[in-house]
Length: 525
Image (cartoon, rainbow, N blue to C red; front, top):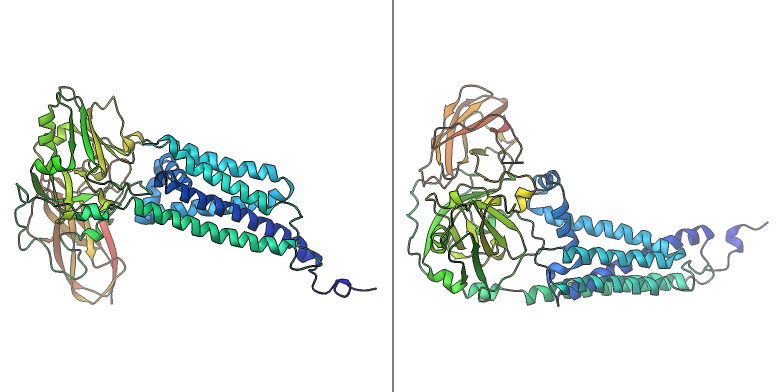
């Protein structure tokens, strides 16, 4: 009797390895087909619109269709990296499905090709379902489906996928090499398409060319003692690069201000259409303002203060003549996002802006260039339309904006918040006197007091930095005297300008903003 090894021709693969290699090679062929789909889709999107890329379109549809609780969890868990996680998840699922379809193609090539084509159909549906879709948005998905089916048909054709047991360099190995080369070529094609999209949509030169006129109504100088000088405490004015960004845009709208216009219509006597130069000519004013996100948990990071520059939104509404019965102003961004602001709030005397700059420079693209709305006292989801192109004066019954349709509160009034920034959670501090510092805000009501307590003891008044106005946060400090060794819990609460004390009861951000006292646990060593 001879064993399998002695009877196998020189250089041949064992039968067990042959059986294992077949599905692996088939799965690799499926991955190559998926790579071709992505590459072809990105390349085609470079000549249509970046938003029409199949992966981006499907990701945008997933954001819109996801339950509110899932959206809130994603922001809380992944923060501003939620979009990268979503895209990574889409690519992972696509890869696993493609590998399975590659295996299926060994026996039922037509069925596998049909399922790849269905992916293209899903991308086309998602692209055409976007609010600002155009017919050509289906072309990237069609290219993706065509590329995937062609590559799958080519790689899984005759002869059989199983490696040749006699010739290690036979059909199986050739397919591995062909699949690998296809993946590499598809990656290069997709990268080139993405680069071309970025270059074609690049507005950095147009942004750099914007010349901001001096404000007709400059902001008053900030008080000299507006910021507490404590290591670890954020600066009073948030650097633009550090300003938080929470939105649903997987691809940033890129708008050339020379082609931009803003339409104001609806329940107004005189509809308006203005260009960017018209906006600058209206006369600009500065506004120091703390903006915060409704997704912020108690003590969360999604708040920042900047000096905005823009035209008066209330003045523009009065120029248009708001009709009786108007209840909300719905802003629409270029990507179709809608945000509703109560008209009563806009016309109550607060200084809302059509902002074109922050911290002395034209708005960055990620923060809404060339124009966005800013309304003090409201969370961003009811006040901050980025990439603004349309304003409609309407009623609450006639239109539910994006977030209201998903169950969020219609008014979006900012809750009173206080945050302990120093010491950091779980920090180790020396015994004796310990500096506790933080930030508090209740925009458009202001902060009147902040209190701190240790281990549930009596509340102690914190020292407030200078008050720069009700639309801005206030920094505060407190000296914890006689800190003894051990683990301790610090808590803070604020009182707003109306005398209302921040409530203790913890509630989640949904549907109208988080409430509760922020606390940190530290160890005195």
